[in-house]
Length: 516
Ligand code: XMP
Image (cartoon, rainbow, N blue to C red):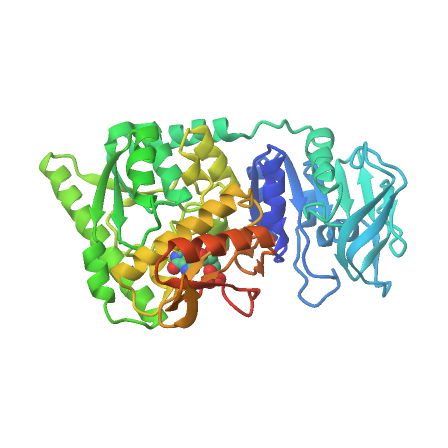
């Protein structure tokens, strides 16, 4: 692998993703890793991420300098660049000139790292200290108006560094810097792709599961669908999938799983129709947190009942179910601090999370993958595009998009409005621009309207289109007026009971993406 050393800022995951985009497998490791531990992993390369602004800062994250002597090609980025300079005898100074944001960079000696790049380019900077003198034997490759050494290299020692952030899209030639380092300087082939991932995972799943039986809960989302498809490819009908229809799904979602997904994968699927149970439990409830708790609780109960039935059935055959598939992704693994081995179930992964006392061994075929890689694997496995390219949808479903009590009639109404909005956004080619667009029914609000020749007193529908990288922060998407107009016209004409469509123009923070 290529090891991405995490100095505690938010950059390591992004770098790891960019390395994967260059078709090279990457793993994130903590900055406390020792030279011996690095050597044991036999990395093809190392990338040091950004971090705090100064290597001289109190408590600045440390790094074992012996790692630079291992002969492993290494690229230092921002803080990592300064760590490298500092460890190898260069000079890092407080010049007082802080650079932040888009900065003009002058390439004076492209070398291997900046080969085939324009002499003048803009790059994203975020630093206080600057490298004022490169370590001995290093070539200075670039500078900015206030930073004399903005990039350096020693082809002989295979050590490289840039002050800017090549992993950020604002750096015009950033990906090219990473690819020059990986392919040209370190000589790592571009051979990490979906086909290899599938092959490796199928082998790993077979080794783990043997002839054992496996169960998997499908949510309708990408992760569980791809995880199950991988397991099915590996062990076929040893896998049984369970899909809980809680009655809070959007239009056609159940059919997409029951028909399209099953047809394309051949998985054995058990659907549990539990909408009555969920709706009675939700009757009269308007508090958002209470709704979430009820939905989470009922989901676990329903899943456990279905699971118990299957387990009993399988045990009667003398062939108990021993394994449970989870769609845990690499960011979950990194964020929960578990690099290797330890199972860690994220509570928001499915509705309310699965119970902790599961008597199953977990199968987690997506543990090393980022979301975009999961989608690529799904496509390679031939899964339906509606599932593979699905935007995020909360586990509690439409239950938290009806502001007020959840009833069957209101769900029906919201489902129609949501289907119209989704259809028009897709038709306008806007799916790539929005992260997701919750459609919300203000069930306890009514306003006066006029339709045909009569007065109406109906409910508003809210459109909440947002753009985001990771849902932690978001901005409202500036959708074209004609698309908004079409959605509004269609909803008010076609959905009885709705006489007004409003647009949510709030970023996150202060608002969350969902209304509840
Ligand atoms: P908020 O509303 O907190 O949402 O800004 C952030 C992202 O998480 C999704 N979301 C959920 N996903 N279970 C999920 O699987 C949940 O309970 C849940 N609540 C919110 C939301 O759609 C957005 O993408």
